Image (cartoon, rainbow, N blue to C red; front, side, top):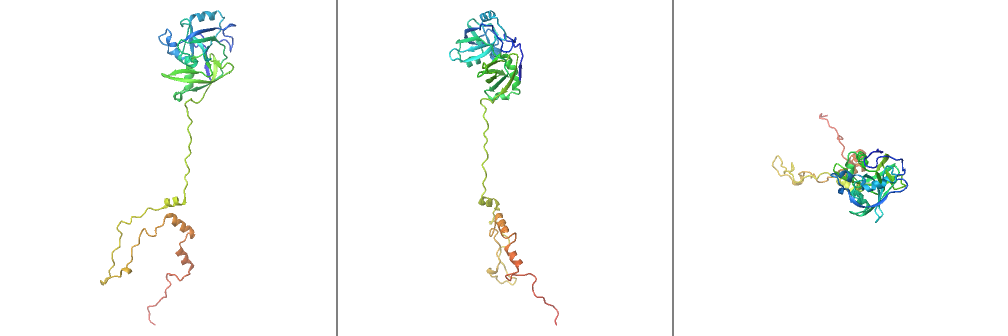
Length: 313
């Protein structure tokens, strides 16, 4: 909630009840040539450019004084060509006769060019209760405390109109902010003078939601699992030990058929997965061991030979 106290400066600081009559029975209405505030007879117009108030000629003040004026002074600006409207306050009555000076963002919202005619009419607006704002750039979120910046900046504004785009300056940077919604909605605009306004922020206009892309599932087949279990191949090009020719002590030649051959490390190599399947197939036992346990087939049995004695008789 932003409290906007009275006494912001200029002609807009004296409250006159919520939505009360601002200018008596007869409204003020004139047509002026729109000019930017840079044409004002002031050395520094940066504060006028960053605010939401206009400069009117002295004759406007004289006419307003005859209409039993009441405060706060609020005006409705209308482009007679396209019908666009916005609402504002008045800062001073020092503009040249026949002209109204306004910030450049107001001229952009109204769609008017230099020296084109604008209708200025007195307005009565209710006190604001709620406003939703949307920054046009996500760089506005880089500000450490954006709500505090808005609270301080909007002190130079008197009214907000739904659909307009206001402009604020902070740390020598310019931020454009859209007025998305206001409450009460009766007039499409609210007064923020001496009002406690609940401010809500919408996502920036250029903000993009991150797209979530789930990782594709990994399908493992029997072949891929077997390849993962394969052991590294042995290097058969390396020299192998004990592969020389055999010889007898008496010098006679040895039959090559009787010479034992060194086992080939690569022969009969089984993968870890094959060994596992073989192990599960025989319930955890090797076939040769199972046959030995059964006792069938007349296989070799250890320590089953007949005994002999060294004594005679």
